[in-house]
Image 1 (cartoon, rainbow, N blue to C red):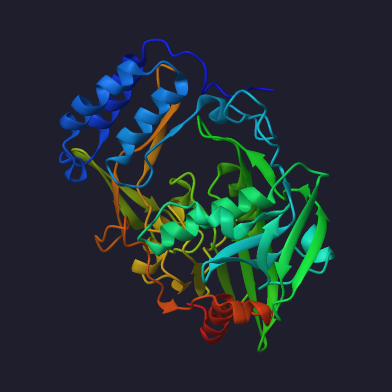
Image 2: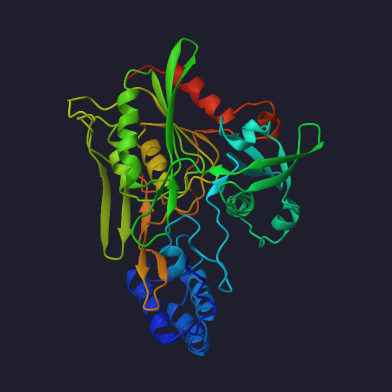
Length: 427
């Protein structure tokens, strides 16, 4: 069981600081550093780094430095988190073991009207078995009011970033060790408080790790839905990790005969950008570029080649039926690259709400002190030359989520995608 290193003495803090500053200095694609005087940032913060006596103090200076760029995909990941196995082996500040958060109540939440609501339930999860319903507000978790947790959020002018912060806060509050009991007070459809006790179950999916990034839980599911005499295949996955590629290939093989396919990428935080090309190849009958990564002095086109062999090495044609993609404000990074590219090519219709606008290609790099500098190395443009950072992907059909529809058991964005998909014919 590892412990936090925040309080440990730091050796040679300037070696780590100078390394981080130099990495960004030579790899940032914009020589103006998004309008920031990068040399002046070094002059201001280097004395603070030199004065740091603990790892935590140095991390604070480094975090301040990367925050000055005011761009996504810049952060400092403590080495004890990056190197953790993902099963409660990380740790909290002060040297105490971190809380085990590998258990779940089996519910997805969203931030609506300044509150946290249940947006989706695992059919066989603890919350569904306990009678929890979509649309219920989360009032408190284990005696701590959710409103108090949300009140500590920093002010954020971008509603999408605010929604992401609120989601993270609520998800952390609801998670815990497998087998532990979560006591949650919900407000139901009538506003009546309901106290529900649930035993947390293992998070569905598999724990996956990529490079120096922290371990993440990866899950992919698919199903067939009958609608107005048509069969629609729906594929959902929560992260772009290589471990899911074979599962996606198998899902496509199982759904080749359906009338349309919907990719539900809401809440998909991104992952390995290169996977977007392989997934796109399942739906394109010719070689196409789904976007361009612009680095300092170089560009890299994301070229998708048609996938003409199935999982049994049999010759097939890429799926030619209607393709819809459902996104929301928690669709981030590689999800935006993929959705924006397929939309711009005219191959997919996008439903939901505007995506996060955090789409900069990035890499994790080990610093001399062992921490990870997660930093963007490029801008990304869709096939029309439009940057995705900031703006994100605007759906072809905007379908916002409301609590009233959740309480009614409806999923308006998915329903709109199904209606559109069943009305189209295969190409």
